Amino acid sequence: MKQYLDMCEYILENGEDRDDRTGTGTRSVFGYQTRYNLLDGFPLMTTKKLFLRPIAEELLWFLKGDTNIKYLVDRNVRIWNEWPYENYTKSDDYQGETLEEFVEKIKESDEFAAKHGELGPVYGKQWRDFNGEGIDQVQRLIDGLKNNPFSRRHIISAWNPAQVDKMALPPCHAFLQFYVSADKKYLSCQLYQRSADVFLGVPFNIASYALMTAMIAQVCGYEAKEFVHTLGDAHIYKDHFDVVRTQMEREPLPLSKLVLNKDVTSIFDFTIDDIKLEDYQSHGKLVGKVSV
Image (cartoon, rainbow, N blue to C red; front, side, top):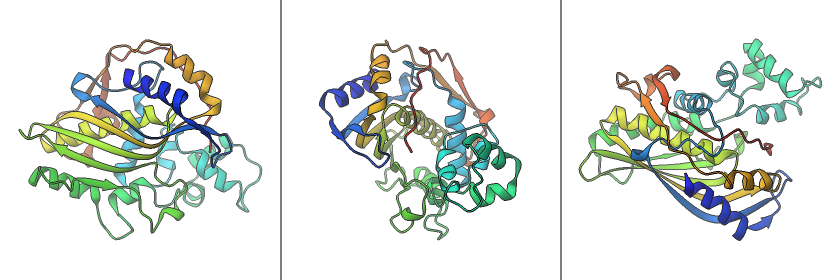
């Protein structure tokens, strides 16, 4: 994962300081690409401790086409909680609850979750029912990879201009393309990410789409080969500078191994119990504040 640390160094040394939507401020570069050979191991960050389970649960949530945080909250995954909470604080129902109290209400009440846990037509909706028109991009992708492997149209788009203003957070990881090797043995994936929080978000994104590539490869009869990560606005928040420098001082460790249940033959049948990680080792946890 040295390529990730090289990116951090490049942004800190060459980026421009910019104001941003959150008010925190960033140092940013426009256009940066890293490549991860999945044959060498699973690219879960080793220079800080991460957990695959919440990353995998989020991916399974996307694949379900779900857009309500209750699925995640019930599994103690906190990735998306801040955005519906921010909307809740502006509603007439808000009674001064903390974020933690809001999450408990989501967990305890289906009715409350239905009203206040919805994120709008975010990733899962666009993947499985694009524009509300019944277009299942994931199923179309699977069919295409199986039946027309050399097509240049193996694409999933989460960016939908017609609905982007209805989303709690417009898609950051917006556009996916898949590529089958000439010998029909390997599957690779390239993600275009329009906005990339390099310290907090990008390590999750790398692992998530590497996992997705492996899952799709298995159900289509390929082996996952490479994840290519192309970033638009690649930025480090100003309040992350120190912790990023701490991470850059750490030596990357050997990569772990992803093990999927070989009995799963449909992308929609994977559960968290079908996804395992072996031999993961890392340096200690590093913490940074989420800018919303």
